[in-house]
Image (cartoon, rainbow, N blue to C red):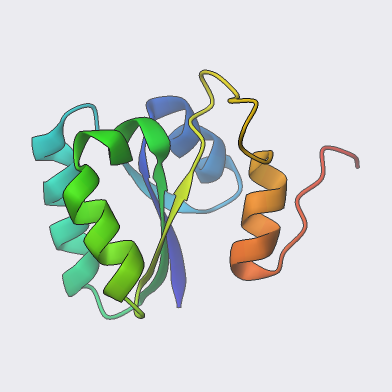
Amino acid sequence: MKLMVIGHPEAVLGFSLAGVGGRVATSAVEANQALDEVLTSMDVGIVLVTDDVAAMIESRMNELKMHSTVPLVFEIPAPVAVRPNKPPLSEMVKRAIGIKITGES
């Protein structure tokens, strides 16, 4: 199963450098179109949506986070600003899929 990112352009670019596919979404319409495509795909198991884009489609995101099992829909912070009340992206990814991401080589 594949991992897919929907959201902020910098997040999609960053994940693409690690071989993860994604769709840039800068509006609610683009976010909903990307989600529609992902939800009908049989090979996507996890969808990461940046929080700035998730805020544009809040009610749909809440529904998906509560009821979607395949794919698992998970909200991650956008790279623009780190919010002090949320854990870092590396910790959120580790909790979601069990993979530790480090900046060290």
